Image 1: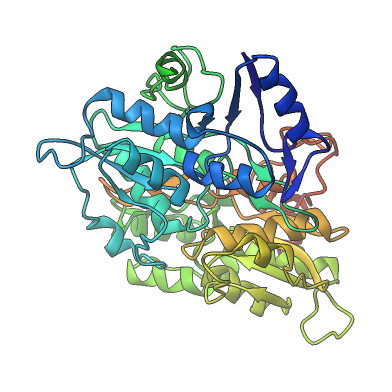
Image 2: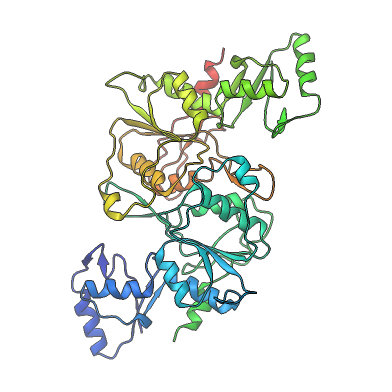
Length: 237
Length: 237
């Protein structure tokens, strides 16, 4: 079985890397199994299937492991976030539709997401009367083009105040090179804010895991983050 | 001369710390000079005069050194940001009115500020055609309740692409305790995002300065940040 990274390996932006399609065909013709692993959480596996096809690359959804899928699979296997369960928890999503679609596909209950816009300018009075939803059992941070001060206030407060609230980071990249001159902040850019504001440390859904004794800078408590990568990889067919 | 911190020393929120007014009166009656130093940049010195008076504390604007004032004084003394100078530079402000007022008082040209709202959801196409204003010669990050993904895109891109662009951080606090349960992200919360996204490191306007060889994590270049504290302190009357 051969694992491929995607960005910069199979494509750069909207361009197929030279002979990538041919390489996959040859490997499959020789009976090799191929899997595609990416810490990019901006798309669901369904979104990646479309991306592969648009570039003339063959793929099945089951061959893709994205950070969005890993986050959703981890939350699903906890058994605590079942959509429709009135006693269940919900995940607060600070990410885009790629994560939303994977959570839906995994039957995970969530709130927030790309369309959630808490008021942009919170006054201190607003902040002191913040309505915290006690159903929130996890904060999921991914690529978040809707990221704002008020989203950070809500997320950091949930992480600090709600007992047992998980902190799932899809990945720790700080910037995406989408073409100079622009720098596109990636999930890791707002993460330090959420982590340092709440004194909590996120666990990467598809990143090397810190040791169990890892602590957030300045934190007096061990990280409560969940080690998501290993269980997800064990779930692979 | 006696230097006082403010938050938690003279007041806590809207409450005067026990006998603070009396202590100031006694010191002044004995001929001591008092100065008030705060790394809180959310108010201008004029704003602090009102705050002192609302709590029954005597003060003159000249006795206050705030991080907002320090940032403005530093930019003013570079001589490159004179308001009305058609050849001059402007500062891009990611902060609130406290910083805006001090820049105005110092005759520093600026754009951005609390009322600046670039589109909340930037598409990659938007980001790749970002209109960069080449007059921008500094990015000033302070307490920024209007902080958003798109503000971070603009700031990080200016810092990476505009030659000699200064990176001024009013302070590095990560969170303000405005009363549980809420956590209020402070200037230091978005800072790691701006710093890591642009591979640049901000200089605190009223913070201990890193050594000149300090580097941003992952950066291959020395910090281009300006050491603001010392010049400002030398300017004190």
